[in-house]
Length: 231
Image 1 (tube, rainbow, N blue to C red):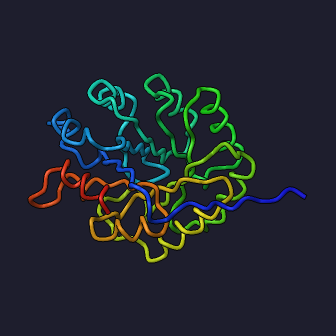
Image 2 (image 1 turned 60 degrees about the vertical axis):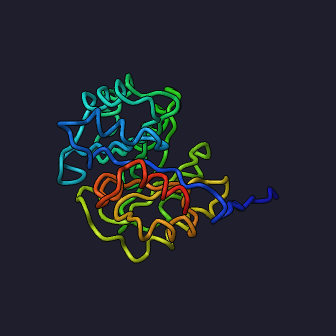
């Protein structure tokens, strides 16, 4: 019988990857804000269709603009009912250093088809899920698609800005980190300067935040990024 390898990821001795969320940037001064976070690990880009979540955000036009201004990798979070349609619009602007996160709540066949499109295109694929969705839902997809190595844990319901983090977020991070295959876990929604260290200790490889990076009182984005890396 094949032996299952459990991840032995060190939960404290690593440097957090930092992804500022472009949702919190000043769109009238987008180039300025992207330049201000040039020391980050990448840029986070939320796509909402007004159906999967109530709000509507960005599309391919904004992604093209970010790509022209910033050389950083981009993580794309698709909060949409029809990811294949949206993905076809985004693919020309994506590169092999980027990642696209898909929701496990989507119909299994739609999710599988979209994963295959990303794989054929050479784009990294990650999984994400609402806080109300049991974390065990990741297992079926990961078992079917072992090349997926990233999980995005949402600390609050997606689609609403500035919510407090759910009480079970740390447990969900820990569960995902224990999956076979050295899964890297990232956290979005509700991330602050105060709770980032706890997220790292629980096993998070990286964090996504807009408010903490762009709106920390008296601190420039670059200094916040540096402080988070030193945790």
